[in-house]
Length: 136
Image 1 (tube, one colour):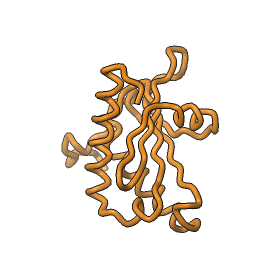
Image 2: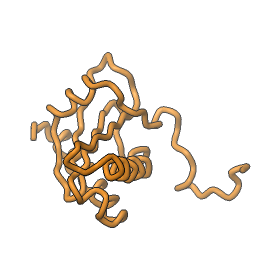
Image 3: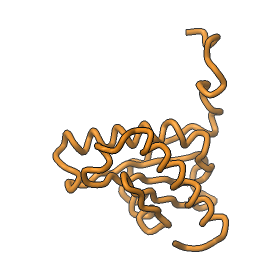
């Protein structure tokens, strides 16, 4: 594809806004102590990284065995990955780590547009808390 039919919403963000994936356990542990917002389909945790850490937006996904068997956990994580892929390049903040935690039964069964709107709402709540300086 030459990109001639892409609309501005479909174009890729600048390189600095690319979303990287969290993979190391210590990153998830640090995020678990950060502010969070619980929504019907997931829990969103957000942590501001220290000045010496890497730039960009990073995101991680986790689903415990409470979510279900491997098939259910993988489906829930696929849905969470897609929600983050669509929203974080535009609404995420540089220097932040976001972790989405799947919830039992809800992550896989909620309508996708409901997950998207809840994610946008959760980002707004966490960004507002971070701006005001409150802990939780």
